[in-house]
Image 1: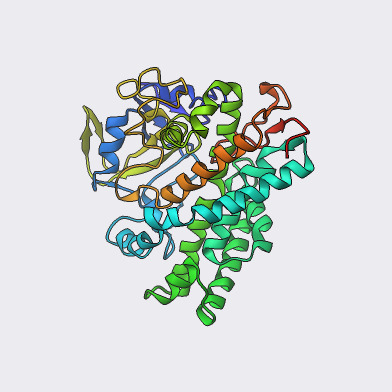
Image 2: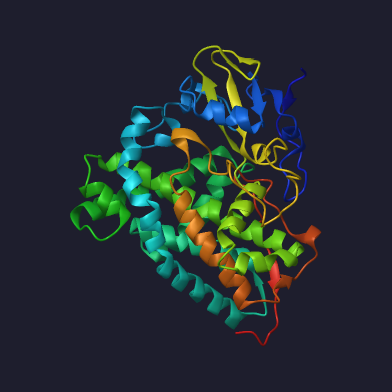
Length: 389
């Protein structure tokens, strides 16, 4: 088959690129190497559970990097590692992100959400929902979990935006990475001297991890906690304002959990993940040769008609069991329970507070993040009845 090339073709703010409509495609990466783009849900789950496919970053090409020039992951950067190294780091974090522990955060997240809604109401009746609501809530929560002062939240958000852009010079991305890493390194040293009640202090004092390892783990957690949930909140609100008949399903405590899962399935926020074949492997009749990289489209898998009927429709009442928005296998997203709690609190609170929330611009005027690694909207201008407080 003729290989497709990057960049992929945008198909609107709520649909994955047109190229991922095919279950399997040959793919030519920007460095010239050939690999595969896979969107078939069953194949993706099989590959993510198969140890013959490696997550080691130095073995795989992507749309933004080449295996020929990518060094091994730094100590603590476990998402770019395979077991047993990946297992060693991840085990230190599993106790920090249990369902029970994340649910205990609910009351605090409700308080944080209420504060930002109050501020929106005071400054309204027009706001950019991204800057006023979607971005600061997860940013504050992850900063508090790590024990980072909230004074640094804006700085972290700015640096994270730079690191996520695909249209900025490489040196700017490198400078942003170094800036955040340097600050986190200083924070780790402070927590080692004077521990407080937070995740970072727990990692330092309840494990044998070095300062470098803890710093790099904190970097991963910060990046994951800042951008992904923020874009589900922003892009999800955009989708719901275009189909407001579904909002009551989201604000009903009896159906909110399923509604959140459907939003996770439907919204193409995280484009996917990559694996490299350690040997020749045949998957569903496709021979992936040793050394080839497979790009796994999670949004494509979540639109697989073999699993989801009418997958391009947002239906908050549908059975969403089996979506792969958080991945699958040993690398499944560690912070997924925290993300669910934040969404479960923030979405209903927003629409209860502003029941007549509406777009302040036409849908085609909303700037989408097609220049970012994580997809979403750069801004979402909204308005409401000025009498609401």
